[in-house]
Image (tube, rainbow, N blue to C red):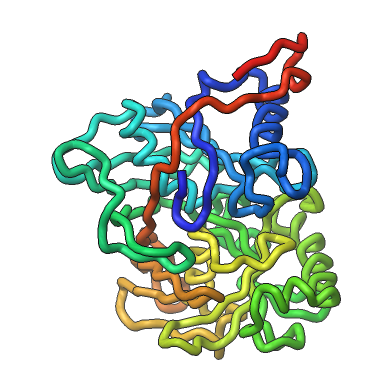
Length: 356
């Protein structure tokens, strides 16, 4: 399925090995272990090398459980540290299509427990005639055309991977002489001012990917803040993401260029956008003087990225000095691409028996 601006495989856990190590080897083989993923169905890019494992929830507070698995392209391994808000968008349709959740007339709410973090999200899926609809007028940047809207209401995602909204305990830190804000409101992100790294923040992803010195600086900062963000050694992890900000140029509230973590994203991840938008409302963060913040307790934040913008709705409580995010909502779309049997080489399995 395409979920948001990502693409990946969706499985029931009973269609995968129960043993975690074997399951991970099977998933790597499915997407492809090599850098081009020529021997699998992955797209040789982090955004197209993803897996969702979805089951009926063991919790009374949710309908389904969702485990996100990132296949690390070219490294033959997986990372289950972060959530993925884009793949999450496809969980609702998948749950309905496969009978995990019964469709309602018109619209079906699917309450999802994200196993990577333990947080909850309510997905509102369009189901006219009690059938999932993928056709509609909703457009999200980074995806061609329009589709049926899927509303994602995140319920308490602060500290999803790190245990705290501000995992270092500070709204502002300095690493290698560069001011940073380390934040986790659904996705661990290090927010930096592009100008502090000698760039404008409006460069294309291709230009930034070719900037070897910039990437060296970003990785040095990332490796140092990993332990401070309660993530430990992040040299083999896909978090934290690194988001470079600049003043908005297309009517939004902030402009971003995000590394995920070593390649510049053509857009920005769902939960990454939520974390960046949250940083913008915090007094004293690196976003001061860069981002503009709407008035009122419900703030519609437009986060610009290389291929458009991402709108995030924040319901803000607390005080002006210490604001809190009560709920984060956003719009995604999804599409079912195919159902079928995926062949895994026999050597991947113990015993040398060929399996589907």
